[in-house]
Length: 173
Image (cartoon, rainbow, N blue to C red; front, side, top):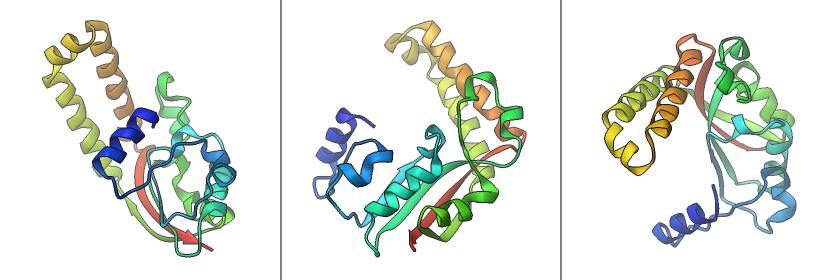
């Protein structure tokens, strides 16, 4: 998410206010109490899940909903992850509820999407292949190969059953 993305979202949805800031400082940066906090595949890129979720909890009002679309470590993720994805930090599937609780949230619902992730990423790789020429025209052959290989590599831990995904809904405790 960057300033251009926020501008585009604001233009498309003028009745919704979008913010961009460091999640670890969100509670001291923003002077708001949001109705919903939504994060789409963000936690894997944050080293300290607890601190990020705690900062969001401090920002929340009692009626705020937290909605997370997240990668989950189903066990031994680091052992099956290709080198390019070793920096991924997916939340441990069996620790989601405790992590939320420790950060001031109460898990309300969790929907596991492990099979869907596999189908989505396989379909995405096929879509990349089907758009080879337009991708190369917009960039370079090397960029096309890089993107294709990155997403093919991401499928490896999903197929191995060590990387999955979930949608999580929580409320402040």
